[in-house]
Length: 425
Image 1 (tube, one colour):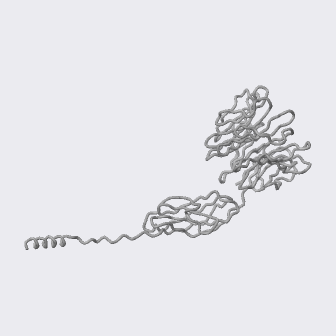
Image 2 (image 1 turned 180 degrees about the vertical axis):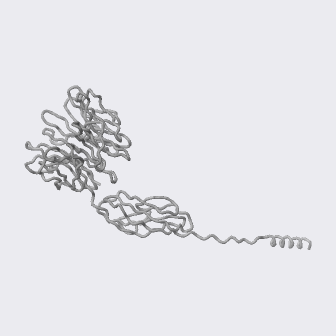
Image 3 (image 1 turned 45 degrees about the vertical axis):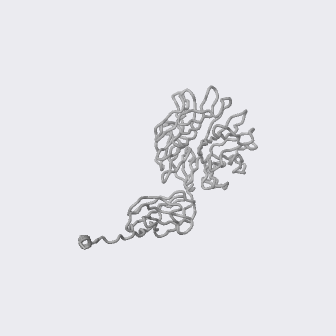
């Protein structure tokens, strides 16, 4: 009886001491709420969109961005950006799109409850912009010119030459030279604004990140050409003054700087490839030769040039230093430019057929004549963009470019003109 009474009292005390739990049950998170920002800055391959995360659904947003597809209702498991976390307004830059293609775009935001999507917008990417540079006579002097979608812009009224073009974002860079105070001066134009380099000619321009690389030459006091490249205007000599040399092309890959050109060794011009200042020979010095263009694809380095054998310049493509011949190997064939797209190797130049220079495009060594007329013609630059092949050159006095073999005239032939560089974006 006493034991029972003790247990009863302990139970009563325990019950009376228990505090009532006043904490409400947790509210489960819901999906975020957001809207998609209208697309802007639409080009052939890029656009800008974004979104506004107006409510996080009661849980932290751990990822937001934009997703896109060529089919409706794109999802985050497909193509998408990651632009941040939290409740925010954000901007997304979308790259790698195909030209003249319809896309569906919507913003997304993810929290612990899942992924929510904003409203869907549709848009069509634009026709690519084609930039061509070259030179047209004004009746007295040659004048450096850049054409954007066939519309010319004169870079200077002085005697000048435009050799190469590279486009990055909204910026258009042109390499060439200009006669200043009776001296030929290497020039780099950015959006038509000129800057001088410490040389006589700028032959090639290439952008790697925010850095601008230019290849070209500088003459010493005795008239010898010194091969050089410039990084953001600061020059580096590749050869010594006593050996006449030229740098024709520059390409940067994985922070390595590749420059192709030639250097006189004894009485012979040797085709050269410099890699971050280290010199390599593509020919053995028996015949005069030059390396005119360089392109790096993955771990492979391609160089286009020619070697004088007998009375003819024989076209060459060197892949990692191993040469293959363009043309029949007995008549002149000179490639000025090389471009690699996937497994295909393109070269642009000319070959001599029946005593006439014929603008030619080689694809994997197979030649296609771009012109069938009595006029001499030349191809100086090739660029491949989403399967379309663009070539810049000339026919007679007319500067031209070809897209997939179809010619567009940039000048009317009233004065001599030629196109030396092409870039598409």
